[in-house]
Each structure stands twice: as C-alpha cells, then as structure tokens.
Length: 127
Image (cartoon, rainbow, N blue to C red; front, side, top):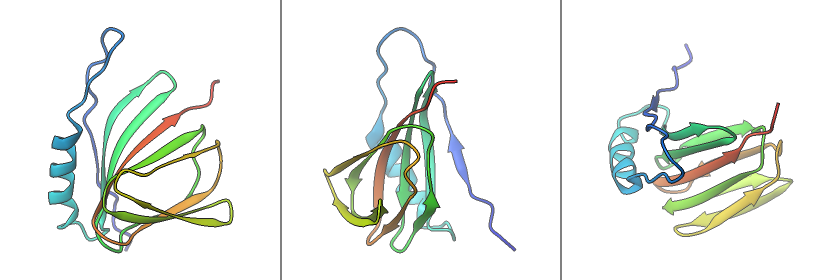
C-alpha cells in the first residue's frame, strides 16, 4: 500500500507588496518531522499567490523527490545539506548555499545524500 505524502500547507496572509517568512523556523520543524516520516520527505508551502509558489522541502538521508516537472521556471536553493539533482541529462550536486535555476517543464528528480532542506520557488505559467 502506498504511503500518503504528508504535506503541511501553512499559507501566510498575503497583504501589501512585501512578504517576509521565518524560514529558519520552518527548517527546524521540517527536519524534526522528516526523521519520523517513512517517506523521508516533507514540505511546507510558504506562499501560493499569483504566479509564485514558494515551498520549503526537507529530505532525510536517502529521501527522494522522484521524476517530476513543474509548470513554470523554478529555482532550487540548498539551505542545508547535500543533494543530487538530475535534470536535462546531467546530474548536479547542490550543497548548503548553492542554487539551481531551470526552465519550465524540465523533468527532474532529487535525492538527498544527507539530511537536507531546500527552498523551491516556482513562477507558474500563465493561463
């Protein structure tokens, strides 16, 4: 039986022209939860408004986000840890502080070489 993916969606109120998020707090909570999660991954959506989606993803050692694509250009910033990201026929290794930027609809997968936290931003395609 497939395990249901647990996702926490805590959308912050979107008011005004500037948004600020306590990412360190999200990281800490996600790392605590991911260690008890059989799928070795968990996430928290920080923002879903207009064309932007911002998500913090935690992967325990060996955790994966299997082959998928998103509907807009995206970035993956490694906030903590080390991951292997396969995209466009190449493998990229991201460590703390690295960022990858990719075009829309590029299939990719991510595997954590150690407990890791990623900040993923997607600029969704228009209607």
